[in-house]
Image (cartoon, rainbow, N blue to C red; front, side, top):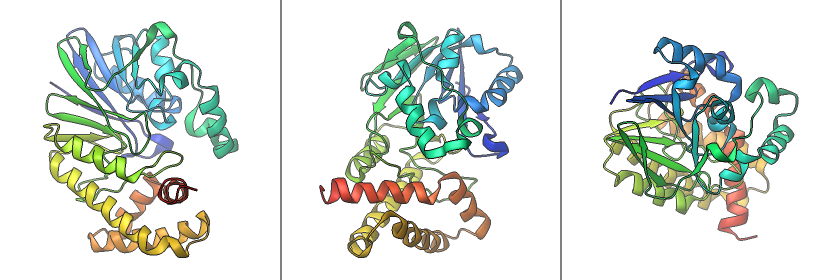
Length: 298
């Protein structure tokens, strides 16, 4: 099996968002095609591999957030089938609510960041069940439900490679450091921990997070992710009772991440890469909502 890591050059940044191309006997599968705004980079990369968009037969979505799934509808219009968790399927059939929610958040920057999002016709949409085996040419791909970042998150195991979306964390360069992208509204730490354990037990030896690249130390990577989760949860238990709002949490969490990164040996450039690729304000918002809605049940 050959896997190509395609750098989508999001906002002209390298090493931020990846799409994974897996050629097979009848074309190619694509894991997380990214936002519509990066289609030029993606289609150019397909051409470099001797493929056209119509050669993509399977688009496997880890979840429906725009940085992962925004271009799925376009590939469906080229003939691909789109595979998604049943809870994410309605947003693919009709992305209006998803786009409206993102537009409120990103405002005038919405189009530059994400572009348009086309619906996926029902005939081209496949709802994926837990433990399903997806046949793509000569490939057999196993789907694993892995919630925590989003309830509808799926990781995909193809041979020994686990495509981990966001639940496996974000990792940049060759740093032995994994940060978790907590985002509202569905961050859930206990579910995330269970998903990491499930991923470890999957038999993977290589891991391919969307942010960013393929790593040959899957178990160590997932151990680092679980350690980060434990450290954040312990910090929340100690600090959240004195934090009144999300803005205050953002400031305090920024301090925590700086100290945490320093302890792991990250230099200033590396910490900046993690902060840009995994915005602290989004993570703090996700953690604040988790604390209020799940931890405290308010």
